[in-house]
Length: 284
Image (cartoon, rainbow, N blue to C red; front, top):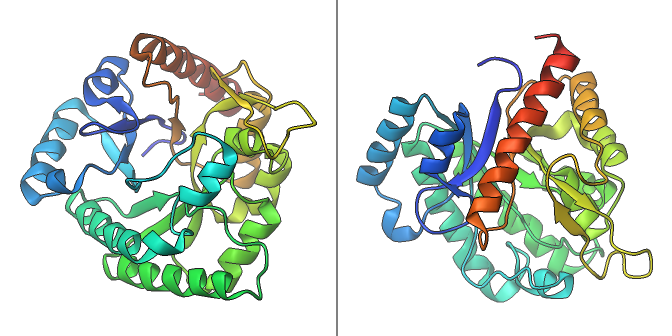
């Protein structure tokens, strides 16, 4: 694979990410895939989807887990509902992630990913230790499929995420870096965070956002905006990735499913911006 192939976050069936027809129209060579519903996670579905990918010259680079009951209505609701942190749903969600890992293997892909949720700040607490144990269990299953797990950034500071990875103590746990999420959640300046966690970054999102007002930062959402219109600084972001030695896909994420035409237009503009910056930085 060439350095920095353009990608987009996509879906097989209803869910996050653009529809496959849009991916084909955009002519991007890679996708991260939002894991389909359980009824679609079959060998037949995987075979059919791989054929569509092959016909279009598209490679699946990661499969993202997500769960019923998750809500991003506001930051407080996200903390209660997202990922493996909520204790009442943890066992079922770990099991579902194992099944998503098995489906990912059928897609000949070696990377699964997810938002693990808001990792407890008290590292001596039972909640933190129980999350560590559940994550280790999941990682051992994923390792059995020859895979790694990439945690998406945003809900923790860079330092807290690094401590969590260290405490889990498995060699197949990495990071999917999303700079906009650091801004949206108010958890840290994205370029500084990227420099801290860079040696664990194995996949990324290209997404942009504007900071919330200082008085609500960390409790109220920032605003997602089209790539290049926000506070990330896309050229600085890519130059930093280059300095860190990252050569993987530049995967565009633009989550406005309520406005598919604008979503497609914004992603098209993002493809053009990233293509320009890639040539400027890499000289190719």
